[in-house]
Length: 104
Image 1 (cartoon, rainbow, N blue to C red):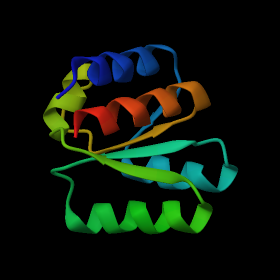
Image 2 (image 1 turned 45 degrees about the vertical axis):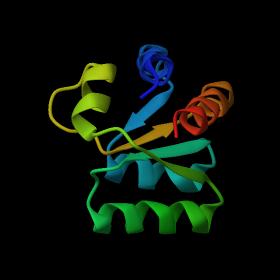
Image 3 (image 1 turned 60 degrees about the vertical axis):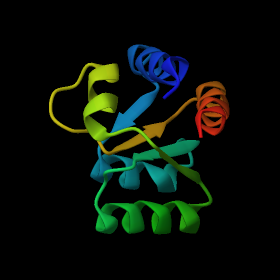
């Protein structure tokens, strides 16, 4: 996986432009302040369906990253596993989409 993607996730977290966790991300979607939702490859099928359905309904782009939740957690400085992240900055969102596309 591209180290730039992980670096950008960490930078986004430090800038306070990230929402972490399935419940918080799905609750943020109606406000139209979340520009991108990222979920990890090891997220449960139920989580993936819930997130993609909500994103589709509210018109928010949703992407899967090939990273495991443990790697994402480490890159943003969280303990435990983080499977779903919402990005609340348009510039960070477009850069992360580009870096994720390059890594696949």
